[in-house]
Length: 226
Image (tube, rainbow, N blue to C red; front, side, top):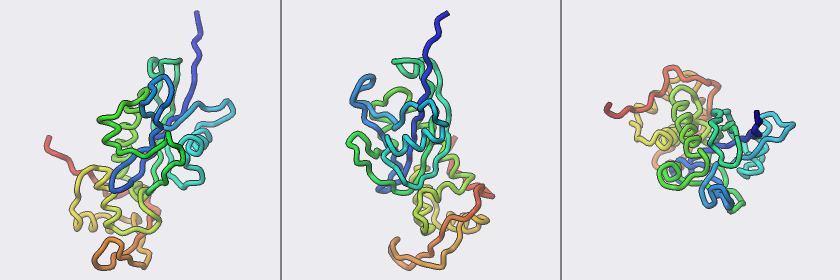
């Protein structure tokens, strides 16, 4: 019986909000397989690396995000046999979230609108599926955790937080109802005592993220007609 080689990679779904759009960091391939297609930043793990260490290294080397504070969590493992035409490869995907992440200095690495990547551009390997899973994870976690604040600066207004929900969920929200829910959720938002006029109009209160990890009650996404 022949024994095939097995490789393990880490792929990164890195999401941020840029110019009022949900964007993902992509790597434009310049070699086969999938020359010219977009892929997620990632690479093979080294023999002496644990998975979180490999994810952090690749975040710096491939995503160009060294020394950037970012929420990073394991997303899923992908291991069906034909996902890479070169050899048998198992990928462990990580989801990274942070506010207004900087552009990369590498020409191959750029931010792109999530909807464009999912619906139009040609993807390498199974990275469209991984990206879709990462986006859905982010959308779902906004419902029951305080993760939306990971897309905000350290101090933010309720309106800025609402725009995060609207951009990630892709739907408008009622401002008054949203304000009542988020300010009434225990330990979600902590007033800083400061105000800002960067939203325009009257000064708005500034908040920071509280220590709540789970939201009670959850912030449920608006559902369309069945």
